[in-house]
Every structure is written in structure tokens, then in C-alpha cells.
Image (cartoon, rainbow, N blue to C red; front, top):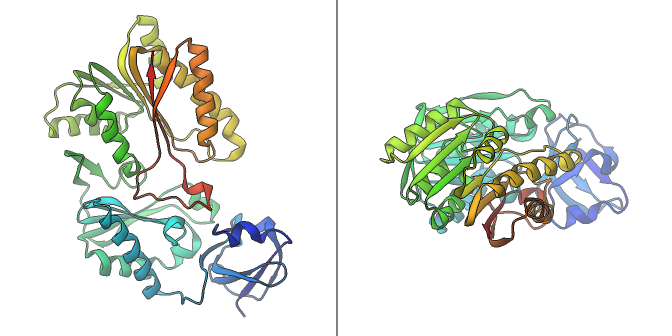
Length: 387
């Protein structure tokens, strides 16, 4: 008999509003019995139907709802939803490089599909989609007719689902690197070893926005493979690309050469230490870019993360020339826009600098956020003019 999940009194409101996650501590009782990873029906305390999703007893997220009506689970449903998600991106003019499926936001919880030209890079981040990997892969082949599909299910969140990290070719052949065009630039993407699925597609529009502020000397901290650095180099006199990973900096140099930029310098080291060293040396920049990795992975870590953000932004503000710009980001959804903005205000006060907020942005439109699920709105991008 399939699982029937009954919530505690009052817990149905968030789910009824469209949030897809049912936490184990919100459940009053479970009826029926089936395999872990099977389809479970979720009901309110009094039996009102709320939806169906895959159950995982090993996870704090007991059920991930993706069926709200009488739809049938199977390849046809996956293909239809993948097609709908992809068609939306195409209508935006995303070209052939974008996030084609953004998990919960596209009613396909825990499934990530990124398109890099003729290749797809995918993540199966829950037990439910992991068990349906073959079926989903077939649906992707039918929709995109790619030359190859590479799996990058090497995210730490898989451990919370009781799953091992996995990577490998799922379909066709996949080269070590693929070249994409972004904002008129050629970027080389390492699908096998690059961060996440190889490249941070969510910052594409933000990287283009940086160009209008790029002039003189630019410092790009946590530069990864150089997306911001390349866009800045298109206008600036000199760009210093800083990262703790020599592998990342190899990609920066490769991308700089591929685009004919001779004004990009790479520096390997800890951003906090190097920014303090630049300060001691009296160096100043016309534009400082801070795009660090997430400083927290849970709500409990948010206070400490804000201290880290405050420290790095204080250092960044002190290095900006009068009239110059600080571009600063956070990719942790546990640090909200309000929390991040308040931290920036306090950092500016500590730095003794008057600051204008010129732009506030988030992830690109190929990463849509559900209003009913704060977790899907995660990227904060601020452009500050330092007076």
C-alpha cells in the first residue's frame, strides 16, 4: 500500500501555498508501506490532499512534492516538464548555454540540468530522482539530442539523502572541456573538474553588468575560472584575478588567452590575507569584486557567516579608490537580502566610507525562484559606489 503522510495540525499552510518540502518533524503519522524513494501522498491533519512526491526516510526532508493534481509519475511527465522548462529558457533568448532545469523552481525537485552547447551536465540530488536516473536521462536525450551528458552528483547534499557522490558519463561522449559563448566572450568550461557543474551560470547577467563599472585597475577576488575577470578585462586597463586554487587560475589564464586579453594577472593565495597585504602596501583599485563561496550551509551557521562577509567586505571597501566601485555577492540562501544589506551598511560604517547602492540583483532568469520557497532565491549581488 503506498505511503500516506499526514501532517501535524497547522503545518499544511506552507505546503498548500506551494512549498515542495515536507520535513520529518512536521508529520503527525504515516500510513501504508512502500519502498524508500517511492511516491507518497501528503495530506493535512484532517485529510485534505496536498500533493505527492518521493519519500526518503533517511533525509530531514521526508517528501519532496512535485505532483499537485492527478498527474502520473513517469518519463512522459519528466519529458513534458523538462520541455516546458527548456522552452521558457529559449523564450528568454538564453542561447545554448543556460540552466535548463532548476529543480524545485521547475517542479522537478532536486534535479539540476545545465546546458553547455551540445552537452548537458546534470545533478541528481535526492533519492527519488537518483532512482529514476535512467528514465530522466532518456527524457533529456529526447528533448536536447545532446552529444553527451555528464553527471556531477558530487555535491555534499547527497550525503544527507543517504547517497554516495557520483560522477561520470551518462550518455554519448563528453570531452574534458567544452567552449561556450557568454556575453560575447569565449569561456572554456571543465565539466569534470570545475565547480558545481563546471561553471556558475547564475551570474551570467551579473558578469555583463560589471562591465559598465570596469575601468582602470580591477581586483577580482575568489575569481574561480575568471567569468568576472574576463568581463572586466573587456574594458579595464588591468585585472588582478585572485583565487586560492591554482587549478582555477589555470582556467583564468586559458580564458584570457582564448579571448586575447593581455591585461589579466593571476595571483594565488588566501583572499583575506592578500587584501590585508594590499591595504598595508597602500594599493587601491577602481573596482573590487567579491564573489566568495557560500560561507554557511545551515541557518545555525548564518551569524558566523555574516562575520566572515563583514570582514571581507570591510577589507574590500578600504581598497576602493574614491568614486570607485565594490561589487559584492553572497550565494547562501541562509543569508537573506536584508541580512546582507545590513551587514554591508555596518561594514561601510566601520570602514569610514560613504557608500551609494547602485544596483541590487539576484540570479539570472534561467534560475527562477519560487515565491513560496525562499530557498530558491539565494544569490545576492550588490554594486556599491564608494565615495
